[in-house]
Image (cartoon, rainbow, N blue to C red; front, side, top):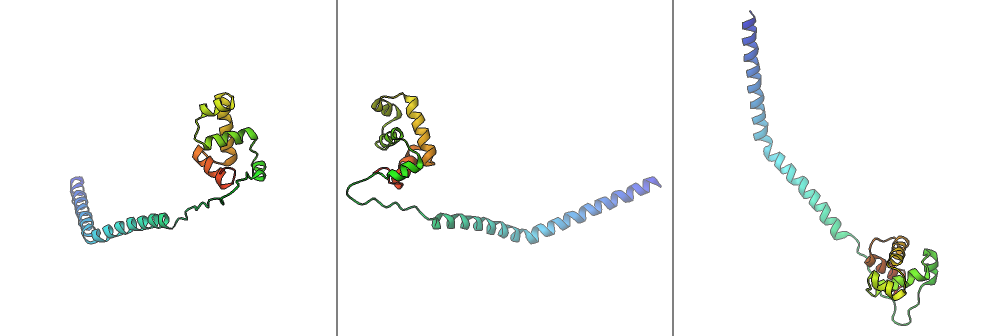
Length: 143
């Protein structure tokens, strides 16, 4: 009796396995094109959103200051809290001097120049020298 139950159970398990395989093959063959089209559609949607953002992103336009006498915006210097020495470091950075050259020109140590540079980056809310110079030009602190 146990052997008969075991054989029937085994036959039913094989039958269920075969039915599941047929069902899988049916869905795979019938729906494979729709699945591939769906995946391609999602990829093109993501690509379209990315390209759209790249194309329509507003670009910053910098207007050159009027020709003539350049005057430093003292009010913004005071608001931001840039000291005279930090401003001198900023001017020399804008001329393209390295930290060592700035230190030699101002007769201070290299670490002092690095400290002034770090303070400028914090006050101007930037991370690089080029960004600091650009930000200073936007604020009319440099020519």
